[in-house]
Structures are given as structure tokens and as C-alpha cells.
Length: 60
Image (cartoon, rainbow, N blue to C red; front, side):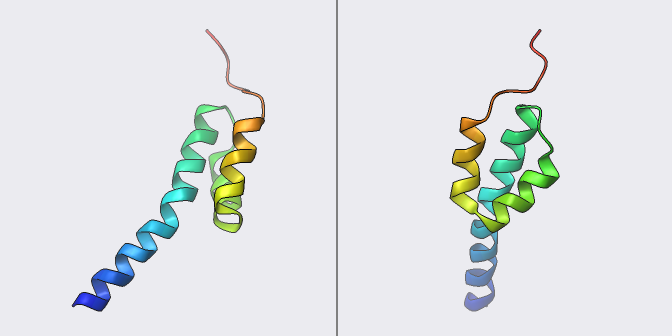
């Protein structure tokens, strides 16, 4: 039981950064699915790259 919980927490941790990256991309007017994949491949780097890109969402 402990090993399953440990592995589940590890998977959740590994997916948390790409999920955060895709949510930020959606807020900035970018494709969240693409940025989720980029976040899986380059977890922390993708988030910093997203911070540096301009906002494409329409400003009201």
C-alpha cells in the first residue's frame, strides 16, 4: 500500500509542473496542449520560457 501511494505522489508531482505551464499558457493566449507537452519535455525551462514570451490574449 505504501509503495502505491509513493508512486502515485511521484506521478502527481511530475505532472504538476506541465499542468501549471499549460494553465499559464492558456491565460496568456497560447495553445495549452502544446505547452503541456513542452512542459513534459522541459519541465522548469518551459515555464521560464513562457514568462519571457509576450501576452497574446486580448486585453479588455
